[in-house]
Length: 454
Image (tube, rainbow, N blue to C red; front, side):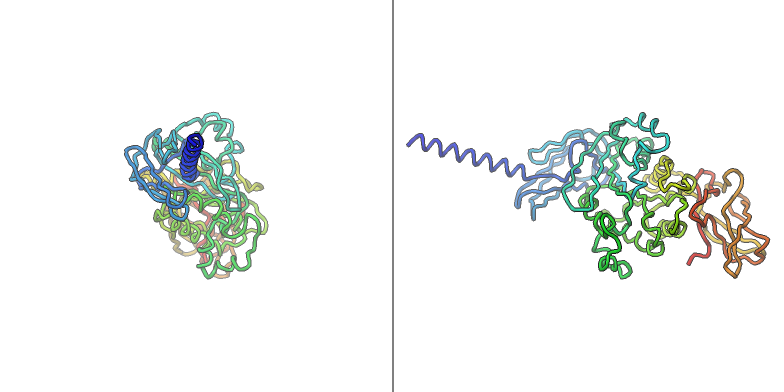
């Protein structure tokens, strides 16, 4: 009898231990909270994950201890603002996460030109060889158009980890590290050949009368399906604390540029609302010139320019001097990352530096000449190789002809053509393929533009 009682007691003890282990195992942080993670400094930091209903979850980090009860299988706590530094250890119940840094966190998203790895960029060998930096961390979201658990991990930046990471993302992060001297975390979530509607939630598309047709009769399949990449590769990251987003996309929407004027800002606002961090910085690269057929490249660039001028806390990196005529994937990704970093340093981190190329301000007509003025001239306008090109001008008939253009007093441009005695409109770079010739003294190119924009 005593033996039976002993067996029963042992069995009960084993059951209790197994139950405790099961309860502990049920507490699972979001995949972004793992060894080597970077947490955003200077703001309340959400820490979140899944657990059994009613499970108490306690997070300890630095001198803070916060707890929550899981509801609906989900839990979330908030750490008070943190200062840059590390490495630190985080405890989530009995789980211990090591080598955690606090610094600046950015999402790197878009299509193939954001996917494009460091190993395929111009001067790749030198970039990879000099990449080692334990304070720069990389996280790559696996490409998927289906909702499923993300399996990935943070990695310290070094040659073997950076080679296949986003080139634009890496060069952006490298420049921030050099400038800010704090840890930087980059989360790459991008898929080649994808339109902006795939990165926008169904709710946001449904709410817009000009975009909800996409949900009724989707024009694309696979990874181009509306909302599929948002659901699979963006929503699972929310509400991880981030400083902002860098974005390189638009090629897949270049057959619908007028729609993109609305779709792109809708996507940006959708992400901001879903993240719950307000109007966080959204910095993006304009398309590089490319001799595309059956595409409306300058009109798409115009839609991007309008977004940068009308959507708060956005900025655009112009890259029309580094395109490749017959390749939609220019290899010079370092200037792209560098110019996005300039925008971040100026707009987000308050450095007194120029971050934009010249932006068309207005046009006046003086006799047979059009006089253009610009913002962001940074001390003056500059013609690449000493000569401006790709300007056209038109009279009331709307027929544009090649024009001559000269810089006036370093801050404006005079445009004319002997065949147009009464000009009414000017265009610059208004073709799929061109090489930027108009810069400011900071060495940043002007976007293509037209003064007759509809």
